[in-house]
Amino acid sequence: MDVPSTSRTSRIRPTTSNRRLRQRFVANVSEDDEEERPPLKCISHGQKISEWAWKSEGRQNTVFSHLIGRSGLAPLVATSYRSINKNIVSAFVERWQPETNTFHMPFGEMTITLDDVSTILGIPVTEKSVSVDPLSFERSKILVQHGLGVTSQQAHEELVGVQGSSVRLEWLRDLYGDVTDADPEEHIRHAARAYLLNILGCILFTDKSGTRVPVLYLRLLMNFDEAPTYAWGAAALAHLY
Image (cartoon, rainbow, N blue to C red; front, side):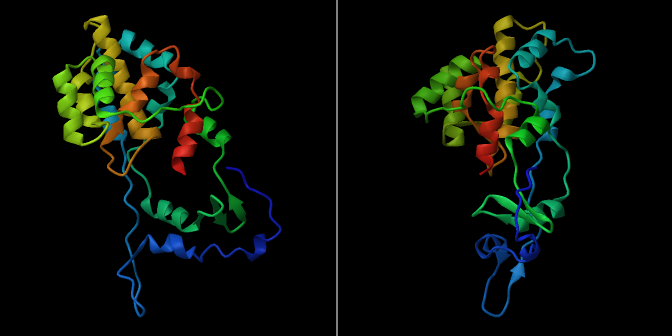
């Protein structure tokens, strides 16, 4: 964390929430009564990532593991969590100042930096920009079909079911969660892309649903040797804001 210097540290009142931010967590607001909502709902994808069987004892997945390593995103596998203290998260939310993108702490202000992202996640922060254009339904269907090795009908049904250019994390796991070295090489490559798309949706680019991931990121996973040339860490930090 970066702690910007400030000459007004003693004047900061961290227990006084920003009014606009506070309103997001206040229920049934009236002139005479304000009732705070319970702690925030935190969604953990640690269990979802571990449900992929490629690391199971006795299962041969050297080819799959090698592809994940080549992508440069392998460190993300170890950064998911199974539980978290919701009260601590709520406390940090109360101290967050959207005008300055900093936490107002008793000792001053703190913000999240690229160095923090690099240290915690272990992914590139200074390579090519992660820039992807929105996709139409038809282009999304073609990308899913070729990138994940499914039929046109399978891609169509999944995209229609989600009602957007996204796929469900569960669908990805059901397709390739039991991949092994005994499978054809092309099948393993499709499985590796599905897994990488899964961890992007679980860790870097989560949304409020907690169940799906945009397929547009699949475009950056088509070439396993090119994937590590993107600044995934910088994109993750930007996504936070």
